[in-house]
Image (cartoon, one colour):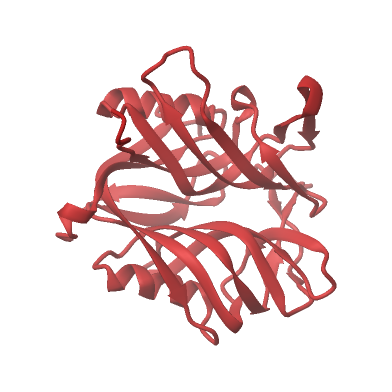
Length: 287
C-alpha cells in the first residue's frame, strides 16, 4: 500500500548537547539516558568518537522472496575494541520499549574501516563515546511496521511539550521521508514552510537508493543499490536561491558491507526505505 503523503513531519524545538556516553553501558541505553537527562523521551544522536567493546551489526541485503522491499544481512560481530568514526541514531520507542535506529562506521581491531546498522547488543568500551544529542520537545518517535515497505520505521508523532529549556533550544522539524523522496529537496521544502533562512541537518539516518558522491575533476562515485544505509550532515542556505548547500556529506554502507564517504550529489539523494530527518534552524551572526 503506497501512502499518498510522502513526508510525515512534526514541528518542534530541539536542544543540542555534547555528552559523554559511559563505558560499560549498552549504546542504546546510554543514548536514551542522555536524552532523558535533558527532559526528552525521543531525539536524534550524532556519534563523534569513542570506543566500542562489542559491535553487533548488519548491512542491507536483497530480499529473495519479495516479502519486504529489502532486508538485512545476517548479524556480524566486529573485531574489537573498535574506534568510532561517525554515526547517527534515532532514539524512540517500539511497543512501549526503548529502541534505536543507528548507522555508524568504525575502525575494527585490525584497523579496517567497517560500517553498518548497529543492533542493541552493541556495548560502549573500554573508553566512553562522545556524542551530540538532539532532544526533541513536542515530538515522540515511534517505530511501527510501514505498510508500504513492510519494514519497521520510526515516525514522529506530536506530543505535549516537555517544557525543555526554551532559551537554549532552536526551532526544528523532525520528519519521516517515504521511498522515492529526494532528501535535499525535502530539506528546502521544510525550510520554506517554516521560514528557516539557514538550517542544519544532523543525527539523520535512513537509506538511499544507492548513493552518489562528488569526486575530483567533476567526476562522481556511484554506490550500488537498491538500498544503502546512510548517515549524513549538512547546512542549507535559502538566502541566495542559486547557491548550493555549503556542504552536504555522508557515510554510506552498501549491501556488501563496504563503506563510502564524501560530499553527496543532492539530486541523487533518493530515499529507499525511509529517512528520519532532523532539520534545525541556524542563526548566523552576519544575518
